[in-house]
Image 1 (tube, rainbow, N blue to C red):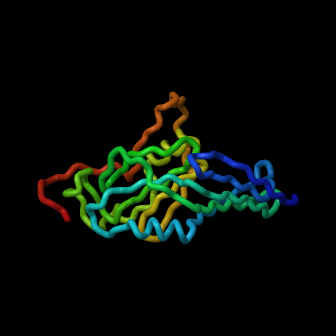
Image 2: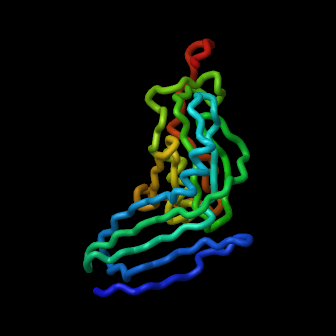
Image 3: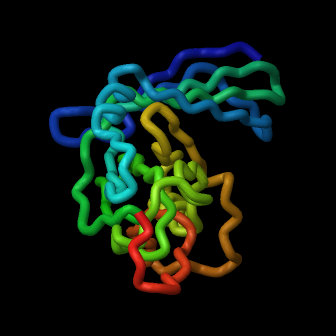
Length: 203
């Protein structure tokens, strides 16, 4: 199978465009391996906003420009490379060290952060630096459900100053039930937090 180059606009949002670039012709039923890459300029922007304290709130961004390149290795093997070229802060409705509620325009993939803390409630006083949830790069059930409901090809978690986790709809096996339109969860975060067992401050 020979490759070819096709480039088309996926979505135009304000003065910028989100581009999807396909290089190669994926074979029907081919096994796809996905690679995520964040450009140096985006890493610099996101790294500058990162802090190491346990009380920082999760942040959210919309991917304004990206390039998706599909490289055909053989009739049964395709490598897809997701290059993130530009992000902008999302409109955040609510945020804490343990979650962020936000929304990007339809067709615009999302990126949110996880903090270097373990939280036992959304209130920062119940968060402590380190612990089992600190620097977590694992998408939560809510993260996957939102990704699937939105129909985005991918989403991203930043879990340290220079650490990023891409996740995809194919990673998640949704329950076999119909989801009514508009019922997607709007909140991204980590696993549900246990309730605090005493009123002492942890940090």
